[in-house]
Amino acid sequence: MTPMRWDLFCRVVDNFGDIGVCWRLAADLGARGEPVRLWVDDASALRWMAPHGAPNVQVGSWQAAAGSGTEPADVVVEAFGCDPPPDFVARMARRTAPPLWINLEYLSAEAYAQRCHALRSPQLAGPGRGLDKWFFYPGFEPGTGGLLREPGLMAEQRGFDKRAWLRHRGLTLRRGERAVSLFCYPNAPLHLLGPLLGDAPTLLLHPPAVAAPPAAAPRLRCVALPWLSQPDYDRLLWACDLNFVRGEDSFVRAQWAGKPFVWQIYPQHDAAHAAKLDAFLAHMLAGADPVLDGALRRLWHAWNGLAGQAGQAGQADVSNPAATLPPLPAWWAQVQGWRDRLLRQADLGTQLLGFAARKS
Image (cartoon, rainbow, N blue to C red; front, side, top):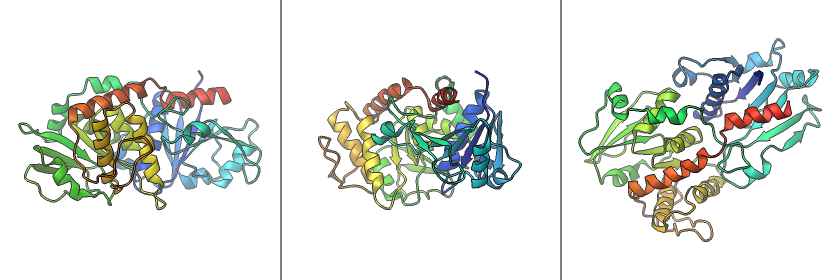
C-alpha cells in the first residue's frame, strides 16, 4: 500500500503513560514506512524515552500544530480524546478530501471496548462540523483494536541474553537470587514488598524518583536504575522473573514479556478502576486453577488498595486481605498461555493501518 501521512496528537496529562503510548505508536508506524508527525504539549520525557528518535517520525509542539502553516495529514489521530487545536480541526474540515479522524481511546478489558470500537461520531458543531470522528479502542479480545506490538518483538525476545544485559548495566545476579522490577505510582503500598519478596534472595530494580526502596528486608537488595529508553525498559522486563508495572504502556509490555506481573492500575476518584482491574483479571485468569486464581486476585487487590473487596459473581473469593506471591512456575504458565492468546490477535498498528486503508 502507498504510505499515508499521519498526524498524532498527544497531551501529557501526568506521569508518562500518554507520551509513552503515543511514542510507541508513532515509532511503530514509522518503522512500517508511514510518515508520522507527533504533536505534543510536553516532549521532555522523550529525552530519555527515545533519545535517538525513530525513522519517519517528526516531533512538533502543540503550538506549532495550531499555527496557520500546518496542513493536516491523511490520517489524524487524537490520543485519549485530547482534542486537536480548533484551528487545525478547521483546516481539516476545509480540505477537499478530509483526513480520516481517529480518536484512539484508553485501553480497557471492559465489554464496552468491543461495543464501541470502530463506531462513527458525526461532528455536528464546532470547527470540525461535517467531519466524522471514529472511535478506536485497543483491547484484549477479537472485535477490538488489539495491543501495540512491533512485528519483530517476539523474535527479539527469543534472542535476548538476560545476564549479558544485566552485566552491561553493571549488575550481576547472586547465587539463588531472582530479579524483580518495580514501576509504580507514589501511592503504591511499598510496605508490602518486604513480606512479599522476603521469601527468597531478591534483586529489586526500580527507576529514580518513582518509588523509594521499601523498608529494609534481609534478603532484598534494592538498586535504582536511571530512566530507561523504551527498548531498554522492555529488556528490563524480559530480564526479570517478576515485574510490578503501572498504567497502560508498561502494563502492555509486561504481557508481551510473558513473565509473572502485578499491575497497579491508574487510580480514579470514583473507584471506577476497581471494575477495570477485575474485568482484566476475568480475561487473564479464565480457566486458571482456583488456588492460583484466588491468590492472584488477593495480591492484585492488595497492591491496588482494594483488599477486602469482593470479586465478580462466580469468581474466586478475594475478601481475604492476606496477599502472598503465588508459586512462580504456575503463575508463569498462566501468563504464557494468556500471551499466546493475545498473539493470535492482530496488533494495534496493523489494525490501524487496515482501518485507515478501508476508510480513506
